Length: 397
Ligand code: FLV
Image 1 (tube, helix red, strand yellow):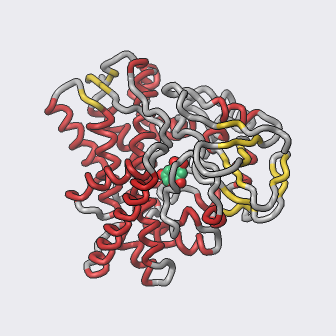
Image 2 (cartoon, rainbow, N blue to C red):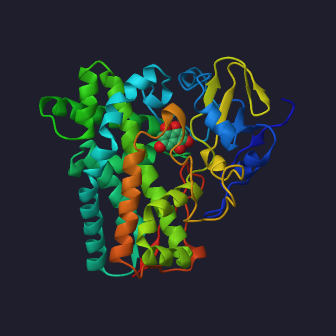
């Protein structure tokens, strides 16, 4: 481990530029070393597809041990509450996820597609009423993601704006950690109160489903609250920004937009390819800690050392994806890792995928002449945040 760690700063990336640290992590013969802006020390960085899928599915790499270390990371504060599923290892992790997994079964999510289509349609109606130009982020993606997820979770409409504000304070690389911690606990208390109401009056929502897990002894109330919080804030923030990036890609490369207008049946596979390609985030999220010495990708990881793994890097691995830089709607197979891998694979992937498809299909159907209202290079992007995306997407139609 003689090699110096790279200090992984994330302020300088341009719009859709692929992070050079990730690009290097895919190609280098062995794992590298990184240091991120917060936390202590250094970590290994896995970027090759084979290494990333190994670290994220091998029980020798633990999430629970993260709670005992202040591991180097991008976020100023740990985002999940301590009882969250993100900090659990199997077999406890498997039990915690059971209730949510039932709620996200593909059939149950398909039942929600008509509501999602109505929601997208209402947002487009609003844009048409107000007239062009509009802001596709504020008017569409932000609203769709917030209301779609809140409807699934069972958050009453009047409280959703408060959730959006809390989420901004929690999922950030920049916020004063004291502010983030307060928002995290306020949001948790709110969800605890709402869970109490659902206990008395069950509904067909995610909170009620989680309470069935609580009754079955699969998770405690604190674990339920921490899990629901993580799903709610990540479900909103990731979907709105990822789809914002997808919107920008399609509008700044009109030949891609046109192809989807001409061949609408391509949409599901186009979404998969865009999920693979879009540079969803800066750096990496939660690391893992080696529970024993382990050989990985040409390096010896010592017990107690941290390993970060980059799904974005793996999604550009030429060993798995031919011409990985190219957006190819005909790519098949497309085993991308946009939703992660292993036990912590996104529990909401079926829902996020359905939402992403509905948002895009509705735009294509209702606003076929959609176009950026400014030159692509004038679109303003989030800088130095955890999740990348446009700050606004001015559009005409
Ligand atoms: O980006 C991060 C993140 C996003 C998220 O939606 C949930 C999270 O727990 C995290 C996280 O822990 C670290 C991130 O960098």
